[in-house]
Length: 150
Length: 135
Image (cartoon, one colour):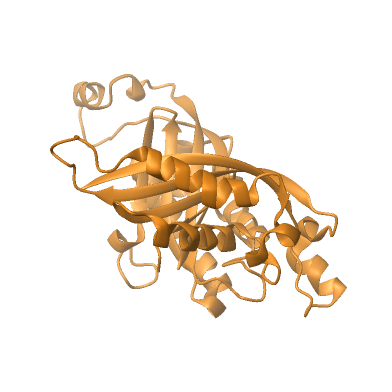
């Protein structure tokens, strides 16, 4: 089993705010991330897939297919967007990097594993750097066994 | 348990090709990596060893051993080489990042006298890397 990781980039704006909390609580919990006008980050996304090497190609998965799926399912949807306002799924949950990791794992798992089904490819990890000083990761073993059950 | 990592770098060229595929299949599957004249990368290898801290030295192992092993087994073999033509392991299989990571594991694991090899990571470039844990 070899684990292959590819790094991607997208830039997006967000605001951390929960309507269920008071304005004062939101300011206390989220600090400057609660600024009503929002702010943005250059995110770095790492996608790790795991699989057996195909002896004919020496590869576990076609990198072009990986790039295509990540671009279509994630980068095209997230890049240069306001995560709170442009993204359906973040109208009801706070676009923290933790929630972004879980969301991206869910967006990628089914299409990647379908494309790599012949060789039993698994989406193993999604890691997201919000800035160069912090990063978050969501790993397969914590994501449940059933497809889509994350 | 502590994990200790040592890094080494080598620069090499390669291309991807399977003689059992037609030229058209090779171009389709391997894309620009199929250029038979080869192209190159600056590779970075990370070797991670796991073990308990020796209370006398405060170290898991003497990292010099790992440094020398990486130099002798990997850098001398692969640095400034054309991997397909000059590294026997890649005479008949593609020097993909996946195959390189497994090959480096196989070169280092039997020669490590202290500590247990935990992971090999090979970066083809800063945005693409492969990990192998020996199985």
